[in-house]
Length: 230
Image (cartoon, rainbow, N blue to C red; front, side, top):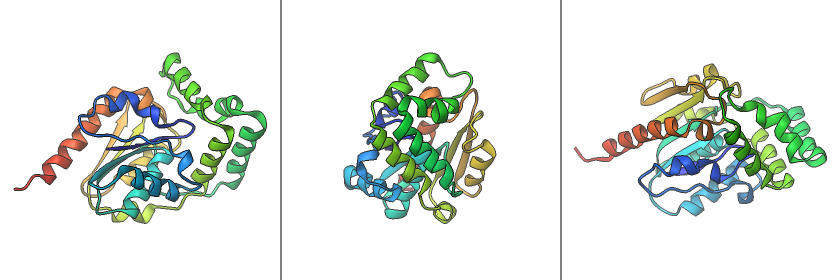
């Protein structure tokens, strides 16, 4: 199971979730893998080696999960998207403003402006502080590259629409980037599920890891059942 993180965090955002997964997992930090989401996906495939994958991505990590599926569709058994959508709306001004904030004002100011507001109202101070420290462990250049990769990513609507294996979409009920209504559309179709997580914002893996773990257990049970010869 491959876990792909959100901005401005790194692979450690999955630590609480991975602890409950009873199979090999991989949670790379994406920023060093290239300058685009597609490059990240190829780097992930190189790190994962051979064999089947269940790919779980949060936010821009969800876009990376879809890119992994596009690059290696025969290896991906299931996709899980968290706080993510397949489509893209070009926002060059927002991209440039965020990069400028990182480069001029620094990570703490960018955190307060762009990422702290995405947590749900019930998120504990400890959870938010741990995420803030994790963001602070990154360089401003790495996060600026991540912002650029996010805003310049490909529209993967067709990839999601053509996907015929299990696809699970998860969204916090207080998320607005994307909203539950937008996220739900990706789950329209056969062999797809949508889960709305109560009392949660954008960062489901760190805000509600136990709930996410339960959903992932269901996904793995389904994948295992489908892989069992009848």
